[in-house]
Length: 174
Image (tube, rainbow, N blue to C red; front, top):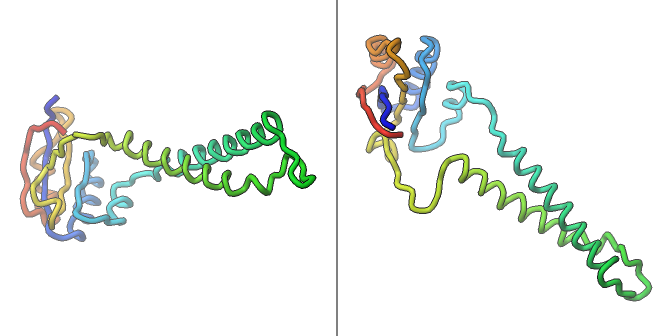
């Protein structure tokens, strides 16, 4: 479904962060910000909350830990108990290496899977660049026009005042 956007490009990260602050003060909704490299000030300027991905990693790691312990306990105690040198069947210290490995494996694979799902990345997906230079040396700030109350002239004025090199009104599928 095509949507309407105001796309502005910047050549300096400082100008981009200043424009983000100015746009947010004017109560415009920021659709996204594109940068050629990570800029932590952008996250703070946009007011984004912390990611929930670490919680998914924790839950998956605990799931891997429990699965590894239960699997080893089942195999060593119930299914195939062996008397090796008079040691007890439930030798928890022997379970530590496999438990650690399965914990890390489950947490890592689940984190990557959750990241791909959340970012809507899948094999064969084509990139949709908002501006051709954002992967090299330009910074882009994209505002979405949601309704007729969006003041395009005010948005253009704020972006120009904060150092935007180019400002475009575009309808596209993002």
